[in-house]
Image (cartoon, rainbow, N blue to C red; front, side):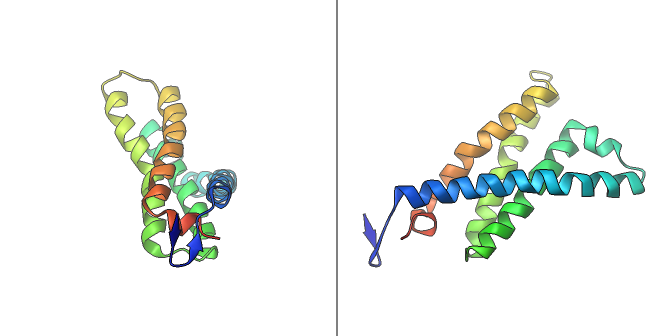
Length: 134
């Protein structure tokens, strides 16, 4: 499939996906202690242990790092925002069964993270030329 004279590459698409997953992991590792320090200093460390705020903080950590990487790679703000939404939407959807006590916190975290991957893929597939150009 060609667009504007550029050939789409499944390899580049997959590599870009992997780069974003690595950036997300870096964001979790690097930013988690920052949140812990800041929340502890504010007397609000319990927010990290609340499943709702904890999940949103973790999604934020991943979004910040991934967004920075995407901006470095030259992406426009709209695809960055779409990819950011892919970090939050799985958790937001899972908050309903969590509130109804149909799932526990561990299930929230496991499925929230697993569902991010297809959510990211969907965001990428909306703009294949953004992620798979040569």
